Length: 188
Image (tube, rainbow, N blue to C red; front, side):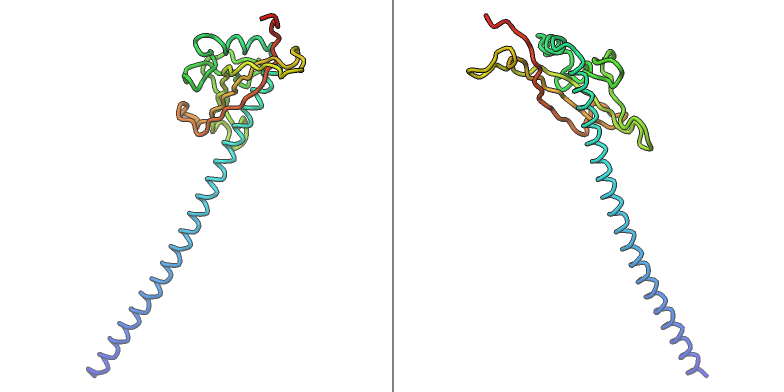
């Protein structure tokens, strides 16, 4: 009788050990699956973030180019070339006014304004875009070129994209050079 009870206890212990080993294998597999799922979600989030920031940069550049086409070239040249470094140089001082705000007007009327991006959809207003402008160098025609069509200025279009609510900490910044034609006196 005692031998039978010992055998039953040994079988119960072996069964318990087998159940624990099976549970450990299942938990290990579950953890591996969860780890892979987490890594996949992280990669998706990084790709989504890059796509949003890239779209916001293109949006800011498009707004700046449309504004430069609608306004008199004198306005950005005179304002950006002021002795204080320009009123739209957002990379010099973040409190400077934005060049464009995405409204109907070609030049932003509200100082330090940002454009929300994307304007609509499930991720609406997740990012903020600021566009600045800085006067670059004056261009001159090469020898033999028509001076009336080759003179102008290079302006630097400054674009900063940041997360909504954390404006000065830009996620990405870029500067694009654009030549603006400008008629000057050739007798200088």
